[in-house]
Figure 1 (cartoon, helix red, strand yellow):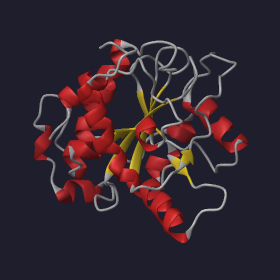
Figure 2: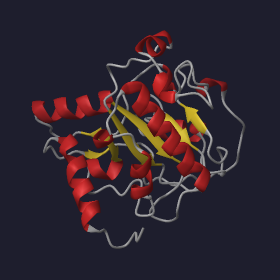
Figure 3: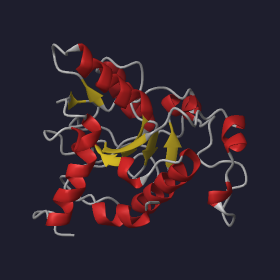
Figure 4: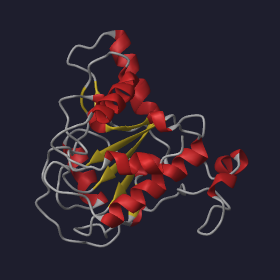
Length: 235
């Protein structure tokens, strides 16, 4: 994809996605977008970030039919299938990082913890292509995708809260304005998004980019292969 010249199809997709905002201007969410990590050291997995809510429902292991997941399977695992209606793709704004580091940055920015539900590593910190669930997913908590303006109206506040509450946030370690993501990351992202779509019945029209929610935000960046992701989505 030519990342410097958006085509007509790109414009059409963006117009469709931005309907999620319902005409309300919202500001950039995340505690980590645009903040560069200073340390790329791998300090090992943190037990505090072990997924207690699986990505795949029972009976959907490799080699089985992922579309066979039942509502009972999801409920048994503590996943609130009625809650999740959207998926938002972010980048970390950094060239390296771990869930632990992103969590620390989020806390410094005033959040209770990392604002994403899943993080996908690029090999600089978190291993390349590894998907790690965060405490937000484990407790089925709201994401931190967008923030209201300085003096929001009641309607704006309601719409912002609704989007954050019902959207799953997936963060790719990397800066999509500076460099392409790794092949392992993109494969892991496609598998994760499709699995979540299957389990939670989220249509392709509700899989959006962070930049679709705010024109002033670049995440996940011009090097993110939109067409490739869309080719793997369920309708």
